[in-house]
Length: 172
View 1 (cartoon, rainbow, N blue to C red):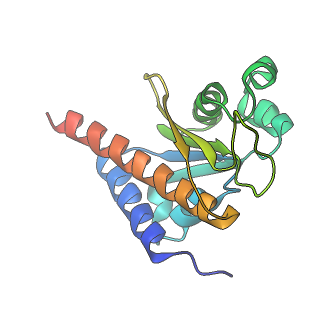
View 2 (tube, rainbow, N blue to C red):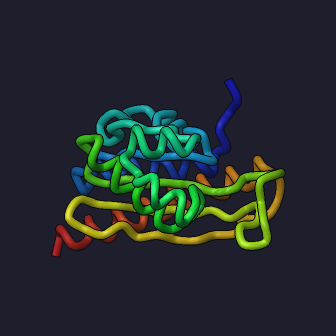
């Protein structure tokens, strides 16, 4: 088994601690990262207290079948789009008992990019029950591994931020 980078494991631990503090369960919906976010989270002992499940939906068919992403959304906007990212996160919530979901869809390369959607383009979304999904757009540089690693870090940071915000609101 390949060793996961220490900085990603530290971020995963932060996410899990924030989820535990907020009494929330996490789910992931991943495409270009192929389950790396879920892998980082489950590498931390005690992850089961906050991690519900993860979906790896690499194909468009899997996005529609497993997460309920509308086929017309993929046709109209593409698998790599803000609309698809939001639908993936919302679908992961709908299919699980989790309270918060993160989704990732992007073009890790080295092929597959275009002028409008270059290699390195990644959309992340975080959805929480009772709230609209929040979507962020990134363009990462580097190799396929660099792009995937940066995507995982950004997803974990986004989840930690959302969980810490919800925990602070609960304390107020």
